Image (cartoon, rainbow, N blue to C red; front, side, top):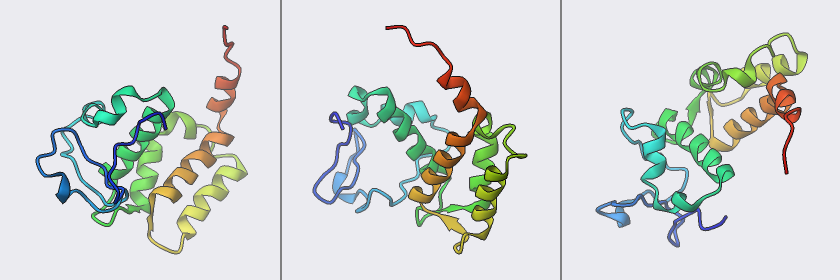
Length: 147
């Protein structure tokens, strides 16, 4: 990944300036809450390995931080919070999709999800599913690319 991930053998992430890296979570999914008052851009800047990342890597890292900041201590996201994130952080992709059967099916599957919470993988699948069917993606595809 272009040196974007700075991890140790146990795959735990370490923030630059972390006074005790050995006390870091033992899993990349373990929540490590940063205070809500710290902006996502500052959180990204605090991860040394992200300074040389591509735009795509930063986009995924941003999504991961938003998930982590919104998740509970088990690294899971409550369905209600996931829906709130769709309305507040993903509204331009979700906007106008309510009448589409596929969108209603996706939200229905979210409601019927056996657990009351989503892990990061489920959250990413939810975002990608909505992205693929969105009108905004169609607008993005129509943008002319100059070479």
